[in-house]
Length: 240
Length: 306
Image (tube, rainbow over all chains, first blue to last red; front, side):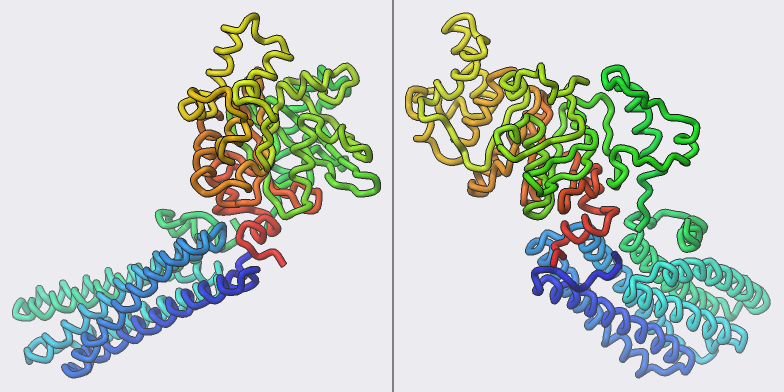
């Protein structure tokens, strides 16, 4: 029942649905790359790289519009039912999550541009590690969420949701360390605030990955779990 | 895909049957073994996913089988028909949905080779009982067909015919009143009030179909069976019939067979999916079209049938 893209009597329907899914995954790959490049630009204080990220934002928006438009056309033309309907609705929801991941990448890229200009805002070694670690964590969650979407894999989706709790804990402890730094040396306050913005952006990337995981569960289980507690999702993954 | 029929269904069916046991004359009180889920004798509707029962049904079928000669057209179909509700029967051609519909007012009696087993009750009474007056049954359970089939008579006579032969009107005034009320309910009165003497066949297809509905409800009908009532109509006439169905549901139980899944989704509150004579799944329409439980239902409504 989760084998969704193929087998319609009307072959064109399969083509439309498959196209929609492929474009969503392409968009996912693009925003994942945006996050990774933005983080790299920040770590290397690489202004041109940050500007390249910002320039690609238009592509992300292009995908957003195109997928939305295609979803609406598909609904109007094919009147999708059951798992097809859930898939299309989930794709439309996932697109808006991906679009916002793109926005988070943009915030990180702006932070990278800012830090390039101000010498004394260079991140401490500890903070650089925190950012690197959280960026890696959030990017792998997003990657796995997209992978779960591609294969409509409920177990993979639940694992993503589970890891969001860890990411949030990482965020909290990184913020605590930042507060300590700010208290020790108030001159670094501006740098600390920039760093919080970046960490917060990465935390949001994790939240969107978790949302995408929930959309997968909606397709597979037929249940809207957007407002369910993570523990409920984990219970679903373990076979109820 | 899990079929939680057993766990979910058994208590409902057991309760329903114990209530009905008075007329059925058989001991169907659930034994302890049944309650413990140990009884291996199949429960009615055991092969169906979803809830076949409703509270206070107007009609109930249990283990209905229909044979046309050697052909086993319907297999152990158990299904309740609810009052003031539209139930849609869907499924590919030859799945048995129309056959089942025709069982509900014994239209299959007219087919020489047809044989019906199992029980169908209306308000608790067996409609296949030898003492059942079939004409009376068909008055209570009316039928609207795929092709509008008004009598070759005037619009007025089309509606007045039934009440007259059933003796529902004492005089012309009463008959006029029934004709007007019925045409009104069928949403046709304003269009035909000035030409009641014109032949029924002079109306457009959609109007003819509404005339047939008016004819059906003119005789104290309680259940309206509709066998693809819109398949010969254009989208606007179809929309008017669908709107009418929604209004009629306040006063009647309606069973509609349709090939249009969109129509089933639009007009019904419950949907039953048939496949090769089996009732595969029954459930709330909202759920069936968003989250069917059976693979066959899913394949059919998403258009994946081979």
